[in-house]
Amino acid sequence: MDSQLEAVRQDIRSVKGKIVDIEQDLAAAKEAKNGEQERKLFDMLLSLNNQLSGLQEEKNILLRSQAPTRLAKALLGEGPPSKKAKTGVADLDREEIAALINKKLPTASSYSKTTVGGWADSRYKTIWPCMNFHRQHTLQDQHTTPVALLDPILAQVAEDCAVAAPTEGDCNFTARVASAMSESFTKEGERMDKFWELLEHEYSVRFQRIEFGDAKTDGSLTHPKGGLVVNVEVKNEVGSGGGAIHVQNAAYFAAYADGQAVVLRQVSTCPTLLIELAGPNMSLSGAVFSNVVVCDQLTPMVSLLWQPHSPLMLQAARCFAALRMALPRLLAYYDSVQSQALRQQLDFPYPTSFIASDGGGQAHFQYVRRLSGLCFKGVIQPHGQSVFVKFCRSYSFAAHQAMAAAGYAPALLGFEQLAQGWLLIVQQFVDAVSWDEIVHKPVESLKAAVHALHAAGFVHGDLRGCNILVAAGAVSLIDFEWAGIVGKATYPYFMNHVDIQWPDGASDGRLVTESHDLWWLSKLI
Image (tube, rainbow, N blue to C red):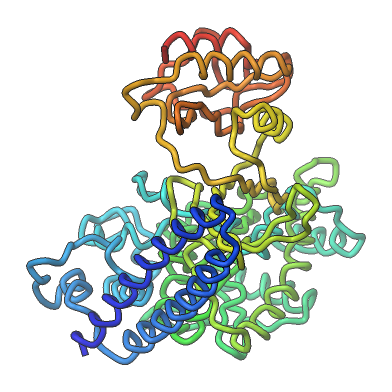
């Protein structure tokens, strides 16, 4: 079986290589305006993509029907790795990661502890990169896509918790919860039972306790088809129970997704809403299984105390409004997910379309690979144009368009406003190198680009060499996240002041000035 799986993987690598070659030939045919060759190459590209989908499904079937591979076995402690195999989690696919977590993860209550045997214990270092709960500050955070970009329902929960307008019913329910949760409970189970009672009556749902070995959840809402819709973790008061409540809840999700949702995770990231209740305090988190298990807090801990004259009550009401709207969406999702075609690219963000800025309507794309952070290479379907796809929370479309019109930036093809303030940016993919990588630097072209930017009334703010592309002796500016109108654009908070030297006055929340751009220019030339 190992040889059969390796043969399929070899075929996948071969087909991916052919796809890259065809994409390059297709771009050349477009450049040469060779319509006949373009159509021929496009048909070949479609055929290869279909072949790739079939091979990937064949690989998944083989993985489900056999024991873990040698590499997975090595990480599981069941045998030595092969001499040629790498021993990093990056070399494992989703099913092997699921097997690793299922084997190594202790009970959620044990894993949540900060003492020996808890999540910080080095004995669990092999699964740290597989479960991003933001407690290990590693590069994993930089290469993991946020939950809000992996599932639109959970992203909407986060947005609703921040800005939703609660109904009269939401406010009345919040008042009942605040009254009940402000009471003293002798035992954790009593608080749990009361919280269940309130949620079940308000939302017409039924919670249960799911067993994982010797441990039980504090309340789980499951779908008949196998999805974990909501999971609740309860502590009688803040600090009681001796464990990290968010880690414990996330660990229950990991145990469920990797142990019980075997079929479901082939077509889904298994989105789950997590509720953490500690005394009269509550938070909401979102969890998915993409390439790894990812759990993000969607809200801070919100007070459930009865404080009718405090804005904290409104914050709590927004959370319950978000919960009211999310439950039917998640249930409807799990109603239909297994009847859908196999979703490919579960480890990439969920958006796969955008509105073309040229008025061409909706365009669809497929991800090719992650370039860095939340930047990806994609290809527009069906004609195969390579694109650069970026996700961020701020962007100066006006500055980008002005520079593109002047010939100093890649064409901006389109964008989408997503939930929770995220933006999807799609631009022309430029086959170029960065300013830092090139020996003979086109200094005059860079000077002209910065002059054109300022002449149009904009500033950039981050003119480092990595944000300047060079192709055929010409410069293209990219990364307009911090750019904007002179006198209005400001730097973001949490700038990197450790690894990067910034111009004087360039600091969190301060204005971006033309002099800052000129400082970078002088440094680059």
